[in-house]
Length: 382
Ligand code: PMP
Ligand code: GLN
Image (cartoon, rainbow, N blue to C red; front, side, top):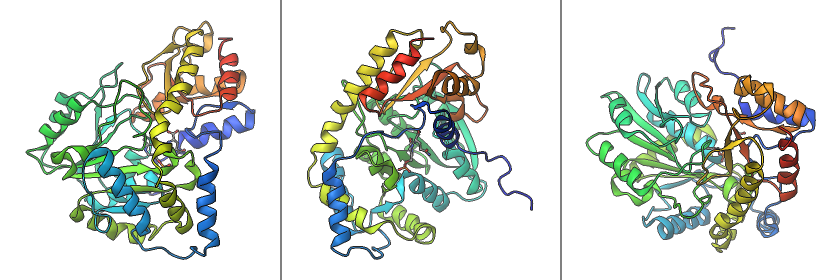
């Protein structure tokens, strides 16, 4: 049988986590915490299960969760999304993004992605029959290059996908960046997919600027978020999409035949837990301490630190190391680092279509201090 997806490989996160497990390495590759979530969140979910909230929820998600998300977006980003017509609960950000793309991209439509980008975007666009238009972020700084973005827009451009705070670089779009994007999109009908899954992992003096806060962006935007990141439960796979009613209607047409609906007790548990904003308000300080601990340790090594404004990722340049393996490709270096040094990382080349290799790898610092310290001890040998 001829493969429909001959060029689609196995995601780097699966590959590196499997290798880390096989070799018993400290896994700083795939992004997920190695510590427990708040036990009150587990209680909230199990309470919902015990109360019998175990059957199909509404296709759009349970009302209390859509209402809680609407209230939160209103409070943090200053825009009202109607929980009935403008917010949908998804099986994580991954499904939110795929479903959005399937709902809006016609075969032959162009979709702009900014490279390096999260590894599901391009295969999603290709599955929809869209044409991927890759615009590089500025090399070195990973900042958006608005002249290049402007130049990439054609009459066939259907959408642009942005991601701030940015995986893998950790960079954050400023208010000026968002305003500039708004200005560029203003005369067009280009839709915006804004992947904001790291919205609460932002380190001072930086601030997250949601597309929801900009009238001209919000009117054309699908805003994607994920509870997995915010509440240390990546395996629960629950996220949301907020979009104007007309766009949400298109999204839901596909959503109903994609997953139809998402885990009921988890949705109720999340809704109850969200009544207290403290956990997400404290998240920046929680992760900033880990970032600082990890960066301070790496500063003692020959890895060169790249800036990190947000997310739970830290990128480093490997070209100053004293080992001959620094001349390997990023991917081979990460395999060697996992196998021989006992620390797994992700090559940045995995986030580029052409495998661009700049001798930079990504570590995830969403780990217990003892895990980070063990990794640092091993990395100090290089
Ligand atoms: N977008 C980005 C930028 C991500 O880093 C991730 C998670 N790694 C996702 C989307 C997917 O999130 P989820 O686990 O909620 O599907
Ligand atoms: N988003 C996570 C990362 O970038 C991984 C998610 C996945 O494994 N697909 O590491």
